[in-house]
Length: 353
Image (cartoon, rainbow, N blue to C red; front, side, top):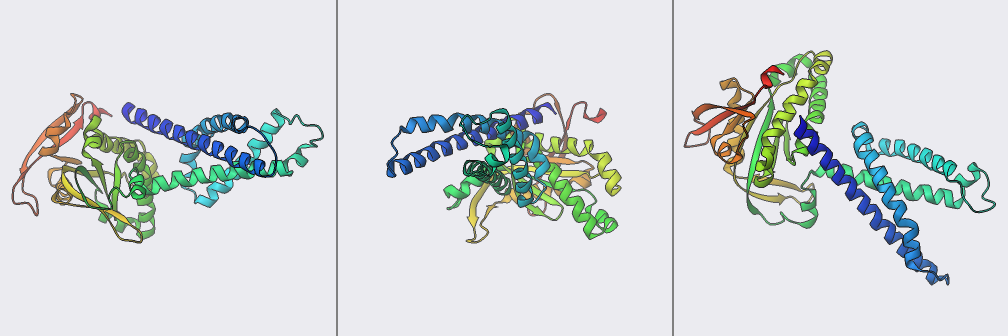
């Protein structure tokens, strides 16, 4: 559990720093526009003085606000619709500005009481500035969640032309899903899937994986070869998902009368990666490795295990001694002319947990 926590904390701090840098850049641009406007209207002044007025506040607000949002509020607000979350944020922001005004009252004479200050030109413009900044930041965070860790590639056109690359794939599927759907009914089953996918999203993101597809109760995840092999992220991702669902077993048992269990198949190899479509553009992977990973996952029930890893992937993972591998043997897979060696993995001491 420690590696997952370390990765989660590191990624969140990286995002806090990105938010702080973005706010600092925006503060400098705002100071530049303000300086240009005032010069145009005959008010002289130094650009650096205006930057000095705005930059420290932007850096402090970025660090404090980004930390508060990503470490405390985001997990609570991410299930809310965007505009609902923005409305809650606006109320919280108004409270913060009032508290700051009480702690640091204005030094100018004749500023009036607190209500007058809040609805003055300065008070309203200050609220709107920070409101738009926070709303924009929340939107960018949500778009990043929507597009995944590869969202930048959509903007840069990295996959505008098909590329050959090595990737690792994990296909996850919920065990006994058909029987569960029949027992719960369509609406309750959808609620279960929605809650499950929400629970397993963070382990995927913190392992730096890309969610490729949701297909019913199945989810496919992909890593670039370097990311997936590094620190055995692809394997740790599945183990973190399994650990999290076990920790939440009492909740699922109380709400749905069951303990969900996922099974996973892993494989890696060369694929052709590219973007298709003009509207709702999507990245797709073409290659035998995708189908093979799906077929490996289908073998889990046959062998009575919750994970199966291809022999090819095991050879490059360099697994530490904290993992135990058990050979399943060579297995014929649908669509492959040659048998493939399979292994199942367990953490030492996991059985006791």
